[in-house]
Length: 150
Length: 225
Image (cartoon, rainbow over the protein chains, first blue to last red):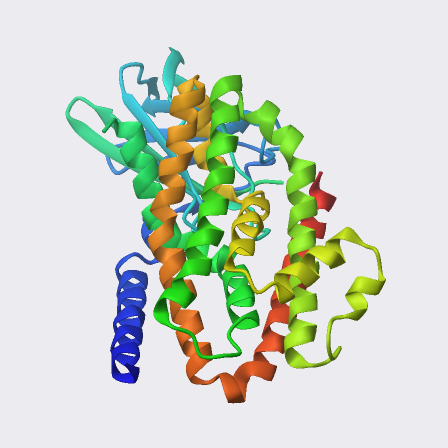
């Protein structure tokens, strides 16, 4: 019986460690995120093909557990891009928080908006990450922004 | 199965290992260590975890149903916030008391009965009751602990716009978290059994530290309101 317990214990520990290695918390965060102070202003990233992705959260201050408006402005060579497919993923860089994807809709002149809620993590952490994925004319672009909520 | 339900289940499975063990592991560890003084069969080790998690999932399903029925996450979450923070603090107090008892710092816990505080009496029941059934109501209460991951699922429950789909979404999420927490709890009980004579008193200090952490979390969440 003791042998059975030891084998079971070793198997369980192996499984837990294997899963922890296969699914590290960082796997839920995007690549090369850009730090920005969302409490003061919007965040801007530029893609390699000249597109500009501007991300903002309203109202200010940006708080957890209230309904917020997420804004993504897309321009290419200074001109608005009104026909992109915009996907926004909200996550915490070091804590799996489940799928949180506000639906983004084009409002006008390359401005996309969606409503959503940034949830509160009981650990006290307040760092969030927004991953913006653009699809336009068969091309895909991606930008990540890391920001703090209050 | 609809995409939303599959996603809820997967969120539970992934979150169980990536989130719940970190956030709820201390609670599971505390009641596991508190009861592991004598040798137990495997079924005796697993049953409390099944009961505790059944209680926790029942609470999730009820909250999911209310979210779905109201169609609003924020309205319901706002009303629950105060209760959840109090539950976090109660959990912290209970864990500190368990730890004090396990480590022998306060000797026996009979003095708790002298004071007519409901929280202390509840802690006493958890510490001393011979029945494994006490873990179900414990899970029911601690299912109310504030949790960011479950909030995300409750947003989805509210988005379903119905009592049954809201409840099913939260229920599947809860079921998804089962493997990780039962595995963690069972491993903890096996570890503590193997080393119980040497680490039992030391584990009390660990439980006290966990309790202080939970108490801090509850108070800091309260301060955020």
